[in-house]
Length: 110
Length: 110
Image: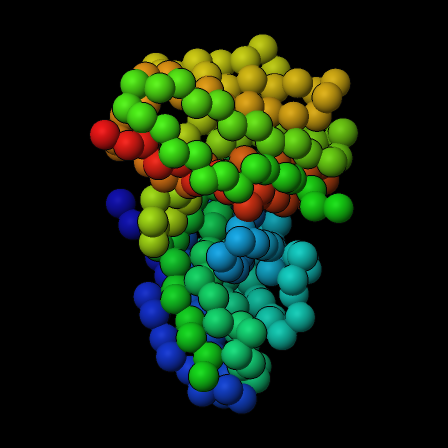
């Protein structure tokens, strides 16, 4: 079973460039999330979506945008990357009880 | 103030030892509580949910104290394979958001 899939698994991106991190789930979960994980800071919520067609801001939304056109996909876009966005990004989905995570995307902005 | 706070450790314990982690949360209306495990360079995965009455799964015991707003995880007879980072997770009401603590790193030493 696929579960939740992220792409790419890693990327080096020049500052100022844009990029979209992809996230797809096949569990038909309504809720989806994007987190970034940095050493010493743990997982911080960037954006979330409770259901298709709706999104909300998390703890650290600045510099990121999301869309939820359908239940399965929840892409995260960096419009103009900055070095402080170097991080490991995790997408997750939830059935209201347990959250399932993708394998993560390691992004380095140089 | 962060929604969820944990002692980051690290905890270095010998095989066979008993170790306990605590986590505090700030929102008294929090509804659901979990412990996740994250191995190095991997995604977090659910270890166990935490119920009001306390619950046990083999060597692992989770407790919830709503009055003091903390949850705990007890690991008995530690194994080398228990080495990981343990994340405390709280589900806030309404927004269906999962908030993570920064994690407690455990290393079990032979």
